[in-house]
Image (cartoon, rainbow, N blue to C red; front, side, top):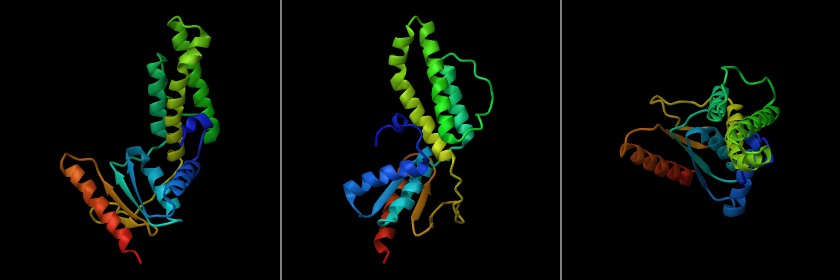
Length: 201
């Protein structure tokens, strides 16, 4: 998929739809194993739900984290601080996410042009040079906004692992740990998930 920031804000469902369509074009309805790392856990689970509509699917969550609005605030503040802006500890505007996305983009553009202009660049040159940075920054913030909108309540087994069939989707989670145990656990769960989908009648 293209950088979502070039198209404006995209909800989690819209992001999932784009990836599912790409998968269907390339792989048809064959079984799928999704490996979602870190903050991609929410998107990985939504992809698993959508792909399950057309075939067997399992999802492995590796060092999963679950974005929330506080993470959006923190990442946004870091970006502005790097531009020399004195950031106040304040909440985001109470806007719907598409409007909030546009507000954040406008603010970053203003901050970046101001920062580059202070270094001697003309406003037109500052906008040209900063376009890629803004695109990447808003791609990340847009992703966090989309995934933070989802509240997930996954069952956890007695060992504290999300290894559940929810619904009819095999899910396993591997927390980050020391090597080589970490890699071995990932390989083990991958094999386990693939075997589970193959055994399903």
